[in-house]
Length: 296
Image (cartoon, helix red, strand yellow):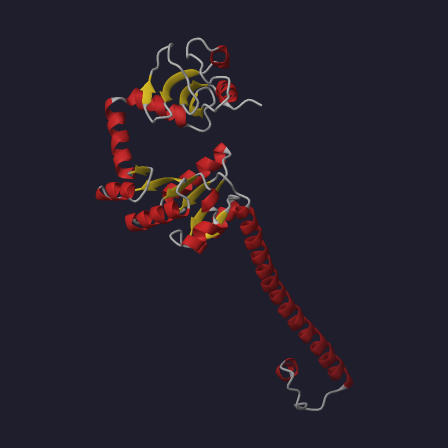
């Protein structure tokens, strides 16, 4: 009788019921159907709300991506891309991540990263990530061929974007540079050089690691561009009061022509378009940045 009742077949009673049996059956019908309807409603609500939240979240993400400008695009959220994205977040720089693995969406969403799920070599995906307005693109995909194609596509859509590409094979370094990459990094080569320095000059490596630690505020290294009309335009390195008051130490100058001058003398002139490589506390570097910024 329970099976017949809850399955809503109800073709008849197996045996005659008393009044108490009919009351029990009525309660069973109401309770069983109510429980079933409630269960279906909860499941439907969960599915519906999940879809709605997914759509709203995707639209909000696309809207935020459209407002990005002068930002970084991290293509590939693997082991290297993971560290790069978290480093950009610690620096407070605008960026977004592109990856085609949907299983990484929850992690990126939990980290509050702007991201776009898709193939980074697809021009439509690059446009959605704001490649035309981007400052730098990091090609960190799993193959050199994909990074080469991505580099060429990014340069075609935005010739002014800086492309930093990862190379797994040695012969890919030349190809990526020919394809338009501004900088090519080989993780294996860098790891080898770092191990060599650790073995031969361990104190030097300790000092470098200390400068690059995000939680070390006592001393850090920064590059500061000199803008047109700034207080340091046309100044002499050893005679500028703004530079002296900043408290930062200038360890190198990259000229607007691309020439690098290490350990510059006090008589060096600073011009607009130069980039100062400075060492000092964060507050000192902020003051230096203010002196290098355009006035007014």
